[in-house]
Image (cartoon, rainbow, N blue to C red; front, side):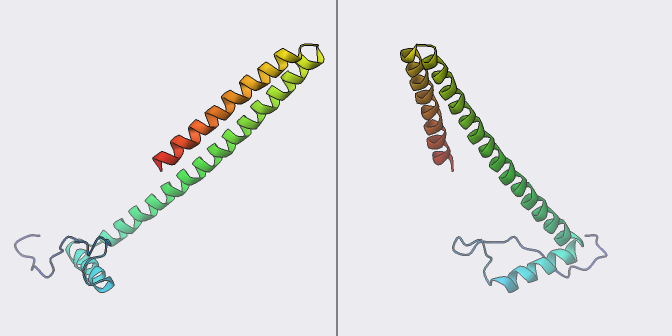
Length: 126
């Protein structure tokens, strides 16, 4: 503000009330604070609302990206298991059942280990 402008409103920082994130006084206090900020700098609420909408849009994009990555991981795991089955069947058909069983057993064990490790790590991070 310049020296010629009157000081009509002073915005104060939001203080939390018992860890709820709400300022003391509830919604009326929030509205009063928003009006104070608008008097000091017009357009502040529009900027805050735009930032909130952008953050919501980014969260939505992250959700869908994670969803499709999980789908892709599941499909890749199923393709890997199917290829192991087909390769083991090929070995059995050619007269080498021991090698087919070993291939399938080792491949399936490594796949199960990878999935369990990924699930356990994912559970600890969230």
